[in-house]
Length: 81
Image (cartoon, rainbow, N blue to C red; front, top):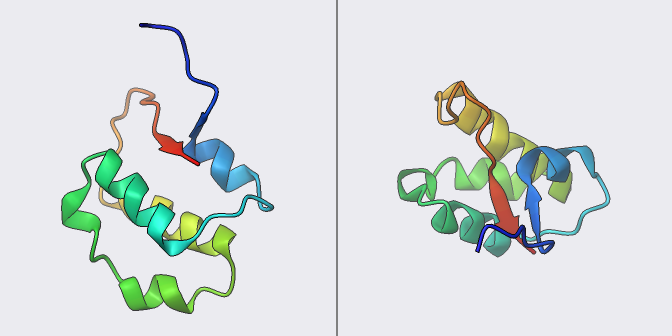
């Protein structure tokens, strides 16, 4: 059960990998999966305006970080691709 699933990537890796293909629905799924329901409607227009996927992920990540969403202790944030 504690075996790591290779289909999961940390959001830090997603941000580093600019070639990663991810659409808006996958971003929403990431938020739902991690129980970030109150952020699902965060600046949806801003995210849609972003000209590439990398910026969408980055915008969401830094928004959540700014809101102190991540623990100070390193917490693994995963997303299913």
